[in-house]
Length: 230
Image (cartoon, rainbow, N blue to C red):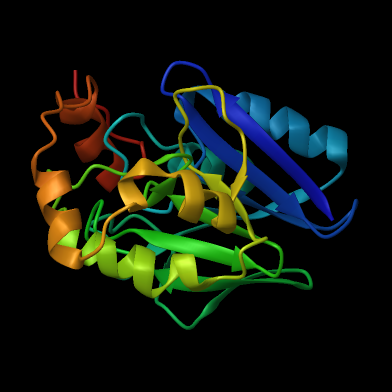
């Protein structure tokens, strides 16, 4: 399997390129607009064709490259069925799969950070978007966020994966690239709660500034990054 973890320094975003083989089709998760040309160059260098670009949710801290990549590569674009982004060519739901060549990623609906948040699972790894971060969890105070729903997504779905499952989030702000489910269960401070209500109270007590690009990124991402506010 071809696997590349790509980092955008401006927004601390991780994007993920996955393909079964050289000469085959590729999937790109959470691409950033400013890096679209870099992705195309890497696709050419690895001799893979981008078949599908997907966002785990509508991001508030960067503009997506979904629309740009569709123009540059003629790939399909996808988001979850709850997404307000009507520009995508595919809307998926839990229980379905993202399919590229013989790769099959299970789709989990993991709301809480936003109401359109999804995670994608391979046998040995999970791409958690902003739901489960390394030693953290995604904030729940905008875009229909819900700490109770996030608790259910975490403890009812993601944390029930095998403990050696690799965790690849959409962001990291502390230089961490990968974790495991077992590590996060043991060391993630946000997960050391004894009840759903305790988690809700913990998240509601956070006092965080809005993302700097939120007013630009959210509407832009509803159009797959093709209409950016001045």
